[in-house]
Every structure is written in C-alpha cells, then in structure tokens.
Image (cartoon, rainbow, N blue to C red; front, side, top):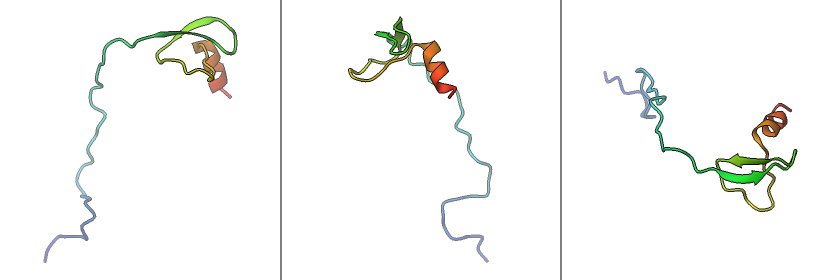
Length: 66
C-alpha cells in the first residue's frame, strides 16, 4: 500500500526554518523631518509624505505604548 496521503503538499518531516542570516543592505538613507507631537527636528529612515504626521523616536514610542 502506498504512503500517499491526499496530496496537500505537506510532509510530516521537519519544518524549514527561514530565520537565517538577515541581508545587510548598507546604511539607510535618513531624511530630516519635524515631529508632529513635540516639534523637534528629527531624522527618519523613510521619505516623509506631505500631509502625514511624522514622529520622533521618543514620541513614536509613547504613541505605540497606548
């Protein structure tokens, strides 16, 4: 008798772990912005979009805590 169990593409073997070494894409380009919460100038690793609030690291952490 065959050990074929329905063909769902799954095996009962060990699962593959994709948590291998992370790629290093080099230093991120930083962009100057003004924090919408405290008004201080800060740098962020993305290009700010006009009309969307940007928060400095400290204010972002405070908002994330809620």
